[in-house]
Image 1 (cartoon, rainbow, N blue to C red):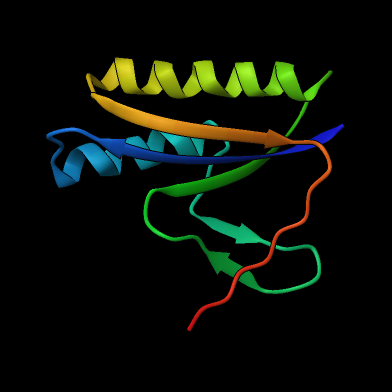
Image 2 (image 1 turned 45 degrees about the horizontal axis):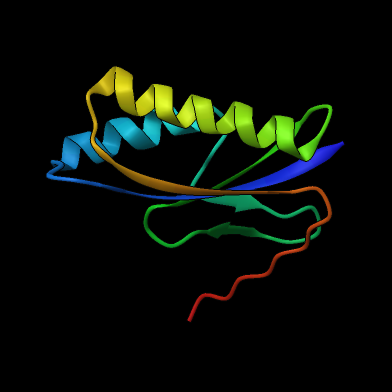
Length: 98
């Protein structure tokens, strides 16, 4: 089952480098700022928004696994902040650049 995961985060008292390290770690975990649709062009998400697709046994398992990865990335870099994560097994999305 392919599951879409959407994550948005905010870091407290962070430098530009902190955000860059967070984005790099999250990209390595499969959450990226640029999304390529199957039938269209790539789309850049707004700042601090990330998405990725993951395979797993259930949406709940994927949500828990990705959430733990995000927590681990923040902890390993000493980053303080919050994140919000949504996982959905039946999804569609759209975006517009103006």
